[in-house]
Image 1 (tube, rainbow, N blue to C red):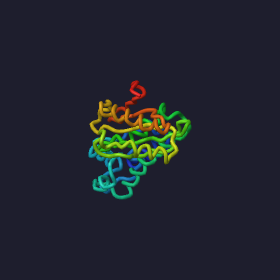
Image 2 (image 1 turned 30 degrees about the vertical axis):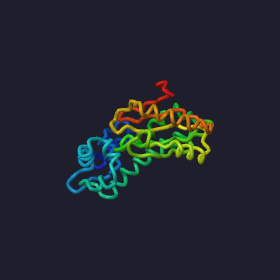
Image 3 (image 1 turned 90 degrees about the vertical axis):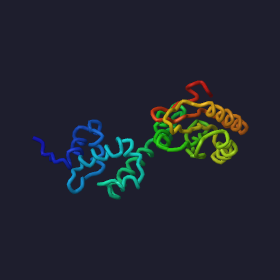
Image 4 (image 1 turned 30 degrees about the horizontal axis):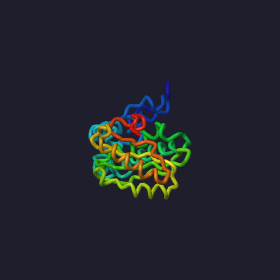
Length: 224
């Protein structure tokens, strides 16, 4: 007979150690991060309530510190644990972009961009600046608000590319509507930026549009 305690406070952690993290439910994973419950509520009860309050694990993981600490049962320490978990995932994905793989074909890039941009309430236009072997030099968010021909300035992107000594770029922006289908405005911006960057011999490898459930690639669609 196992000597593992079966109290509600420790079961998720011990289940993870014995069976692996993959067998845990969303509530059990959250319970491991939280560590303990509150007065009158076990850690599993608290985890289940948080999933309900934030409408699932996605809402919880992407919540701000203010949103977390204003929730019953979450003080600064528990809020910090959740925020740290999200940052670890971001850094893990960013590390995946630096392993020498071709950026335009990288699943890690899609995951990284989803985490960076999917939850933004407004449009964000960003660039991945790459070296001549298409490895990541830098990721920068450059323009905010409604992305159209007037708000994305080719001169600024050219300046950034020169500063980074980039040989290529991947353009990125999100659609807060959740629908990643490229618009005619997206295509026009891509053409303008291709022309501007060509003057300094910087290739536009792709333009990625981040939606709620998918990331659409111009290159894969034959649009670039």
